[in-house]
Length: 215
Image (cartoon, rainbow, N blue to C red; front, side, top):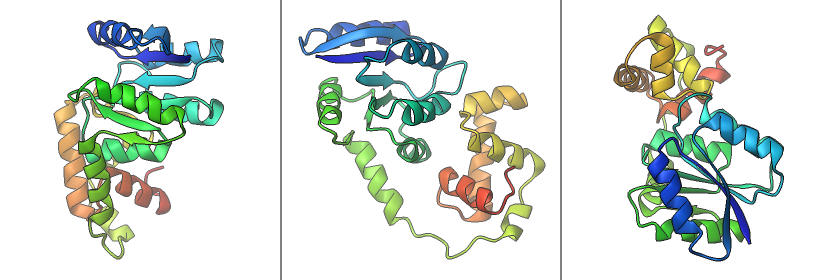
């Protein structure tokens, strides 16, 4: 029996996933939660969880920070990201955290079954589109060096966005904190990547940390 938690801020998705998964006798959905805070609380109370199926973007506490916490405190729990976010930056960030599977919501639900089966065998699983993005991230040429001068071209607002990105906040959360729209946040990120020549935001945050400019 595989004990699961489903975390998603949409009630219809939570309940439909629970119904779908529990049609298979080997799966037992212990809890369904609507945000990262509830997910954290359930994990602290129940040590019998085998797999967490979670969206990457939910309101409230940063889901990314919760996933980091799971990897630190609950290393035996498998984490499956089930999301509509197919952006390369999000995929790479999730991989860096150490998620076990990344499944897109627009794929057939049977992929989620395959993902659960894979992670229980200590294997990784990614939707086909995500696998392609992972391959592309390794094939993208990297500039030989990015120096401090590149970061000095960033505006004060861009540096704020960079810092909050490094803290694990989503575009919506950053927008709320800075009182700007999430689309403006995305524009700032694209501009920073263009200015510095970084491959993506994960690469940019890594470089900025190395240069001690994001703290």
